[in-house]
Length: 627
Image (cartoon, rainbow, N blue to C red; front, side, top):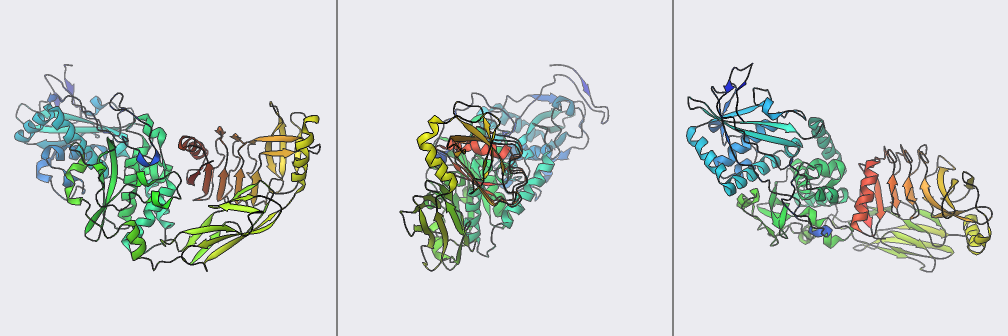
């Protein structure tokens, strides 16, 4: 392209051959064909960060120097830069870092034309360099491997020095080499938002999310215990973002601390940035390390405790079962993980000063060293339950104090003929009463009890009768209502058309109800069984005292605003493959509401979690149980 472009405000123009060097941040380009995606188990995801392929560098000639240019070389190595800047190994990498930071801190709105910005826009960032350095930089950029490595390291350093600013992932950065006939040399840059979102507002949301996250963690003066508690709480909050991983998009929020702490969805660098961001607040020194694991690009952390560094891979620790203690800490505070390598193209290659040689503060040793932080109490979410044979109930427990590492308990039943229990899931077997005990492994005197009464309700009698004569009974007309007056499944149901008799749960009988079970089926007065397939819009909208809901496997759809403003609803159990969850269904839930999803696979689990979050459950804590 040839021509002249004038800057009306600063009175400088560009003449001769007009050539543009475009550098793209990792967080912007959709990389097609640059790498392959392979589905992996939750504990071995890799290939979720990529090295940006830089374009061929070109040069711009201008008639006079742009006003407002900074003299980069006089400012390099100053305190204005973050710790990752200090790891960079060359002036080429450092000036790339400088212009990335300068441009992104004043990014242009989505849709801006970078060629118009370079003509003298307030969004254009300029740094003056010496002729020797200018020529050195041009030479580096003409060597593909050297250029690719320098740019990727600078880009990572800029991102990780600014984990609290999502714009460093979500903006596209353009570079321009510029020189004048009087031998003045510049490197210019501008950044353009890749979406219409307000990144500055999202940065504040991220800051608030960190404060909220840490407010729910008991304070302790011991850094290793703080690290362990934060690590575990992060795994409880975040789900690996399979969709983000599969998209191949560098600009995806899954690559940010925002994705982890606000959306609850992240890939490896999102986990790593979130962990560093949380540890920074607790004044625990940590870094994000990039390299390769299992043959693909990967990010993890190193944490400094005392005078030694330890390696932590929160992504690989995020076991789908969430309760497997060994898997949750398999990659916690390790002495150099042999399956994690720092390759030359990544910034992690330059971080040898943080190599992990620590051996004292391993997971097992933290539990031993701080064994004085003993369990003092167990509280169950339910003190008593009324059930029918074949029914399941999920009971959550809270262990005190929050920072104890003594968290192992055993579940027991006083009569397995009446009810059995496994890891908090109680199944009623036959009529009678039974005590479910939760007992500390280290101190049997610390325990709690749930009284369970398994009785034959009228609804159960009707259903038993229906098993024998339902075929001889005609289903009610579509639109007819059924009223179940007793038990936790009590409510109004509406008959809908279907291949088999089916109903929609319309509303609860009592707006003050605390515990609801949306059953798999209900029975009418004639003994005919109807399958419960949906929850109607606004079904529980006015139930301000609702604390727990269990949604059976037959339910495939939840209507709009079904549980909106249920501000005491802290326990949600979902046992089926929800195909649709309408907007606002879970809007305004209490913070840290716990959602247990029964799913046969991680893919199904992630699909259901995404639907629930889009329907308003953005601040809930999710966990999976195998169905």
